[in-house]
Image (cartoon, rainbow, N blue to C red; front, side):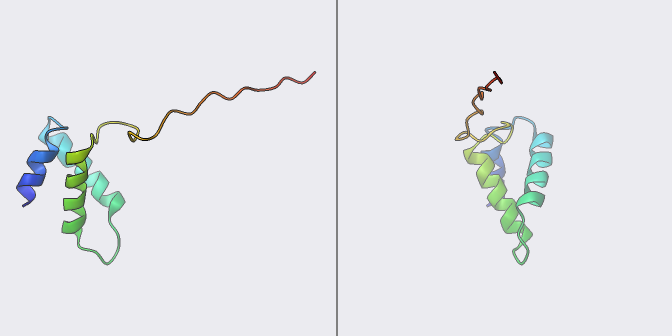
Length: 73
């Protein structure tokens, strides 16, 4: 049920208003044509339950390393 998904997503987001805003933005970005909007919303809430939507970077991604530049002689 969707209420279970909402309560699961609230484990990472403390504010319900913020959860609603993040879920609506993510649903707009992840929605595919010819699929139900309800299924996309449920998928977003399931993703929020497993990961923190407030973090800027995915957990697997690492910051870019500094690149050394050569100076002309």
